[in-house]
Length: 264
Ligand code: HPA
Image (cartoon, rainbow, N blue to C red; front, side):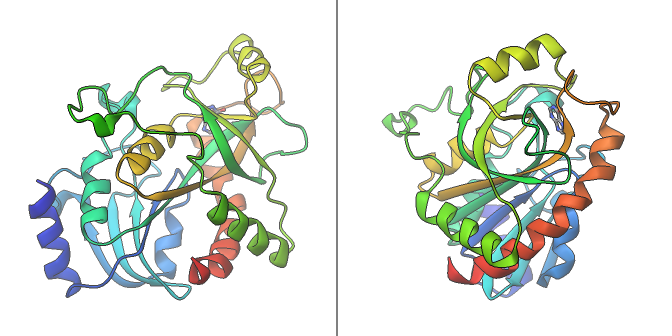
């Protein structure tokens, strides 16, 4: 599956180089419009996610963005869709086989911190895998024992922080907790996750970072805060709200990436 998807991408893009793979979260898919390159629907790529979640458009776009050779995945598979946490394994294997060395994941999240309200961004410096799931369960090789001590690459983080600073955009760092979804959390669960040391919560990214490290990719991830987490804000938490709120942060993220990617 990996080789046939890789071959389709080579054929359609004329062998365009890929250095940075990016996964675009809910409401963040608009970044593909900035890429000068080739779009391929996931439906044409064996092993890529099927019809997913509204707000995730389901296409791979390979080309140039801000001076870098990129492959943007607009749309991801989530654990809550089918009960599989390794849904992004083939896409990441394919992009790694095509030359990707860096993975940047983005997501929408709920914040626990009053100083990181909706519309703001957070750079992940660590995560809590609260789901207890792992995309490497069943992987037979000893490579499955992945070291996650510095899962979020310090040099990439420094580059993203510097770009944010130059753009005058706040980019605090913090811990992302992975909660399986698809229901949102209860206020009691949010109080618990906060006590455990998390700053934000979301339903993705963690399995992708585990897979990315497994594949030897240097990884970074940025969250766009779309709401205060359950019990902490006044707005009604909903997927509609997530999709409507993400573009606020997405505009900032675009500026940061526009400055940072060329230097990676
Ligand atoms: N919880 C989990 N996932 C989310 C949230 C949230 O509050 N907001 C956006 N994605």
